[in-house]
Image (tube, rainbow, N blue to C red; front, side, top):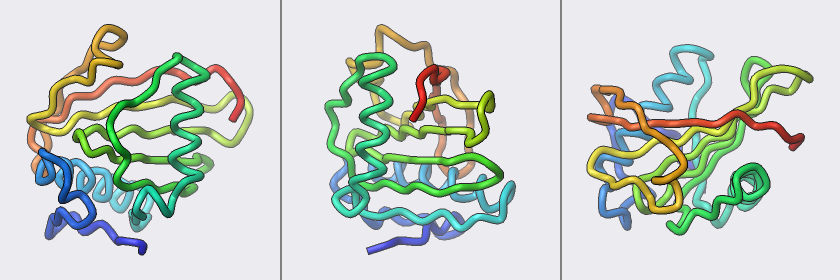
Length: 154
C-alpha cells in the first residue's frame, strides 16, 4: 500500500516498530518537503516488502561500492525520477535513512546519502567509515548525515 508522506501533519504510519518512530517520521517528512518544494514531486513510500527492487538496489550499491551490509530491518522504500536523477530511498527500523542519487546522464552526480534520525546512534557498520555532519530541521530535530560518491554503474 502506497503512502503519501504528509510534511504538514507528520505521521508515524508505517514506522511504528521503530524505537525512534517519531524522529524517523520527521526525517521522512523533511525529505517529502524538500522534493515538494524543489521539484513539485509528491513523496510516496511503500512497505519495504512491496518495494523489493528499491531495497535491493540500495543494498547492492552499498555492498559493491563499500562492502557495507545494513543490519537494521528496512521498513519503507521508494524510487522515483526527478530532473534527470533517479532517487531511491530506504527507511530502516533503527531510524536510518539511505538514499541513492543516480544521475541518468553519463558524468552526472551519483552518490549515496545516509541520514540518522534524532536519538539514533550511528550504526556499527557505518561508525568507523564515515563522519556525520549535523543539520537542524523543524520537522526532524537534529539530523546527522554523511555520503559517498558512487563510482560504478547501476
